[in-house]
Image (cartoon, rainbow, N blue to C red; front, side):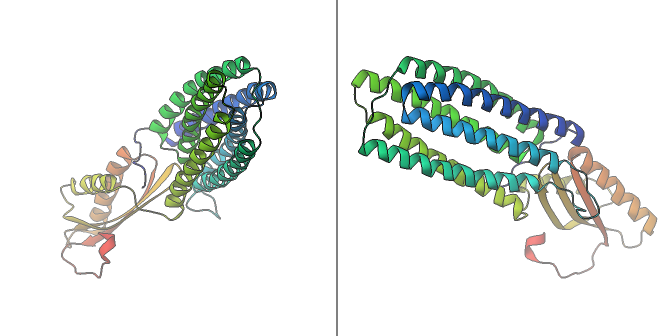
Length: 308
């Protein structure tokens, strides 16, 4: 489903918040890759390897996100009159493909360890690294949640989903290491690794689905459409509203609406009313492009059922 539109932040402020979130994500991913690589070399744990692979992909995804965010915030130009907002869902779709591919490789590695079990060594180092990873990731997730709430950014939301999944993954790795040490059963580690791989595949599917929603220009949620309709009808000289069309492209929303007014109004007065309605909509949805068409009330026009 489409996401509700956050309101109140200017596009300039949104750009600053999105870029900061991507920088933070890249920094955390780089730090976790370094410490997990050392821990995996020490422990030979499949679960820890799964976490390392996920962090490597998070780093690559965060770099792609930075490029996507910069591109999505580029103003409209001659060749892209509607802006560059769809760079966000395109980047998210690419992330989904990379995530799914990594999960398949991890699943293969887990199966190999099930067939040919290998002992885990130096579990203390692995546990220390994973506890550190949980703490760092939790801080990043809380920050990303705040940014998503204020910007509605799909690409930051996808990145936040990755790191929320990392929290589950890291806790699972800790559990696998502890259980392997306590029970002396080496198959626990690849079983956890395989389960984590399936979790990542499910996450990739969800990421791809959300990206496709924007790429296919799905309507904004009904609650937002009704709010826009109510804003237009609140003007005393607007009699009715029809043919509303909405969509989102990255941080920008596009709203088209027909206003019905007294047919005897002069064109200049009808234009003034439309400008006032547009200003009211933009006051609530500042990151929107609004197109309004004025119609005389009571004129029967052919209308498709889905454009009400």
